[in-house]
Amino acid sequence: MAICIKEDLLSPEPVQWNATGYRITRKFQVTGLAAYSPTLRPLMAVAATDATTGFSIPAIGAAHPDRPEAVVRQVRGLCQGFDCFDVLCEYQWDLYPSAYLKSFDASLVQVLRHYDASNNLATVTYTPPGGTPQTEVADLQRLILNATVSFHFLETADPEALTLAYAGLVNSAVWRNYPPRTWLCLPITGRTHDGAWYRNTYSFAYNPETWDEYAVFRNVDGRIPPGVAGSIVTDGSSMNGNGWGRFIIFGQTDFNTAFPNIK
Image 1: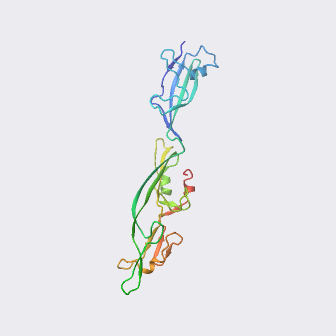
Image 2: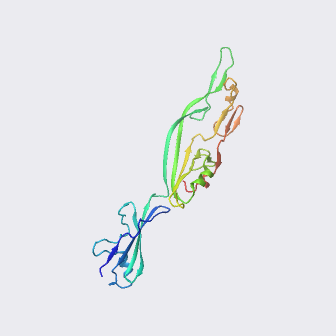
Image 3: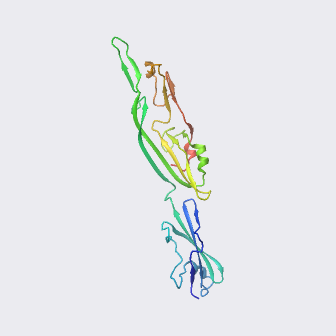
């Protein structure tokens, strides 16, 4: 009896989402192996060629006929009788070539600051005719980097739970070689096809001057009293002084512990 192969008995093709991408399974039925010994039949089944059509069981590394990005990673033969084998070909479609994908977006935004690019307090001094010099803090409109970095994973972690736990927090310690409170965790988004594996995106907004905010005392006329200028510290070594305060406005957590897979 000539070898006969019935193609693609699983319809539609089962697609599973696993840790690295998609797995597609195709099933074939091979008959006409009676001429071979019982020992050889399993080997012949997984490498069989149909005597009439010339179709061959896909080999390791063969591309899927409809999805060339998916290739055969495993071929298994299952004995169903004296002269009948089911052959399962498992194609793997790896979405990610490494542990994760990283994307980065950046722009420059204009912000109000009381210090210059060298982190020196910006002050102006005015001496009225015959009067006493008066020094005040200047309001500078500066462009600073507004950057967002995102990491994309296939994982079992539920993005809803992750967002509730971490969105709106800043890094309390040095993270990815950046100083504390310079990265703000944005809502973590994800999608799932089976309720088990999620395609999650972790996004973080960067502020090179930290996400802290300064508040400076002003008189009723809107002017900053002269004595305030000399007490403001902008390097982070002090959090308050005469007429000013630096405030940590976001909650903090150690991102090294919260996101161990992000480097």
